[in-house]
Image (cartoon, rainbow, N blue to C red; front, side, top):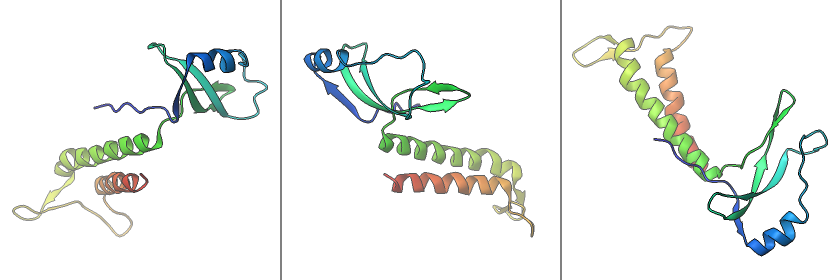
Length: 138
């Protein structure tokens, strides 16, 4: 299940404001050579015809600037929490039966040693804990 994460903020503006304030003062650039910040404000017209003001936090990588809408943090952390919870469940369902050594009727040992704990269990705990932590960030 993919979760659509809306932009933040995603402010609707009127057509009149868009024409008077946005189009008249817009600067269109073909390159980013003179940009001094990666924090941008975008004016967008969606397929529905709605005009929106959206923040962007651009990422520069190998002399290219990648620009898109900044995601809503609440939705971002919620989707990350769900993703990590599903990863922890998948590890428990898939890896535990492969890695566990039967030591009783229903007891299985995920082997460990003095120099390290079991990798499957480490990944399980990592994803489970981060799914809970992400919820607290909301």
